[in-house]
Image (cartoon, rainbow over all chains, first blue to last red; front, side, top):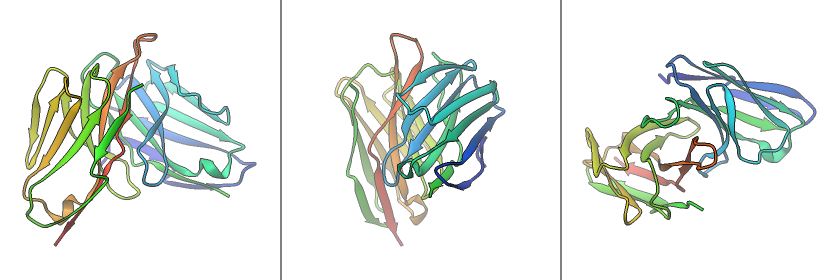
Length: 114
Length: 116
């Protein structure tokens, strides 16, 4: 069982909808990540939060809006998405920056945009 | 810009074979390298983490080596089993000088199929 929990597992939405993806971990990790993964491609980093503050935004379109309400929770708010945004969205966490600790991944949310 | 490539892209072997997966990176200024496996439609499972100061790590039938100076890592799988069938990804960890935070850059992956 993964220690990083993502909900929902699957999401189908229209281009005008607003939805949110949720990620939760209770390992005391202070760094959390969002990745986007297209089929048969490696994960691509979207955002990094360190101590609940956004530290990396990989030039992600504004229709994706991350939020880190507390050290255990990471959200990704979605609005006016495009069909090309259909992908597996992965959340990960690790110990705070500067330490030699592995990343732990959730099982992802499979997102389909109609 | 750091680029991470994995060879081969796909591999099909009979059960019981020992095999080697390769990972190459262009910038040797890494903090560590992590190997993952990913089953279809699933998240990533961490297999091994090698610090930049280490040469290898072992876990069960898996052995990962790291040669920072040449920009290479290998994952050795002994006595392969059908349950090893998955995509294997390597990822290097680098620090961004401007912010002090770090990021992982993933390789292109190797899709492994072990035939019973």
